[in-house]
Image (cartoon, rainbow, N blue to C red; front, top):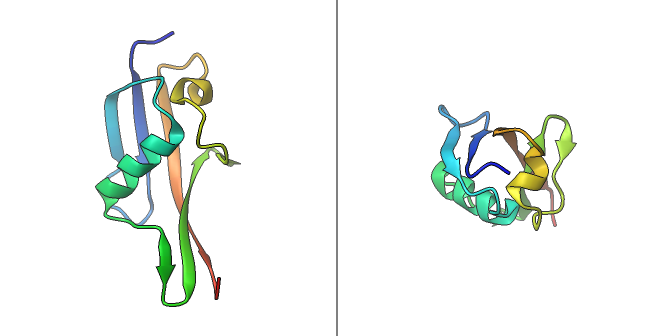
Length: 92
């Protein structure tokens, strides 16, 4: 198992991706997502009557289980590249 992972998270509205070249492979997706949202200055919650949430994707796969460790998502790879997508539910 790799000692660290090179994690990159892209978000279309942000100029530069989130990058952590020494991410802990045992870190959960929930923890990573919190760091990514903070870096991009994003918040989940109610916005003008709509519910705003952010979802992590690996390729086209939506990462629903945020309790997974980064290593479980990356597998044997030394790098993990994810995308952050905004989801807005009207009148939630």
